[in-house]
Length: 94
Image 1: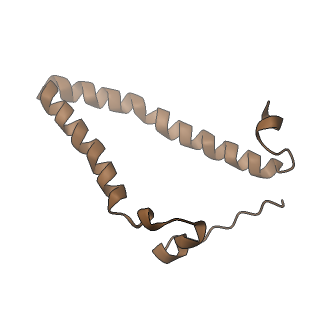
Image 2: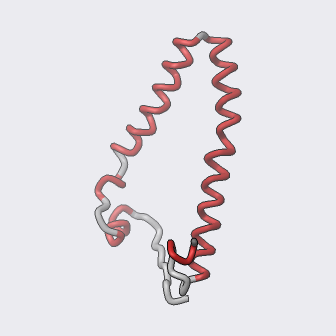
């Protein structure tokens, strides 16, 4: 199945992407139990409406961070240099 989804001629790139995906999934799913405990504690302490208001504010603040960040101006990978991003070079011929 993986041979049909990704090019078999780039095994190191596929391995690196797999490790990146695994680290990302660990971070995302690893925070869920902490958020559930925090949300349950806050809901029982501060009340449901206050907890939902805090959660909504946190969700909207992440959107505002992206709206006002220079990431919105990036249209091509070469535009990353103009916003001061570190240079990345991916060699597909490994």
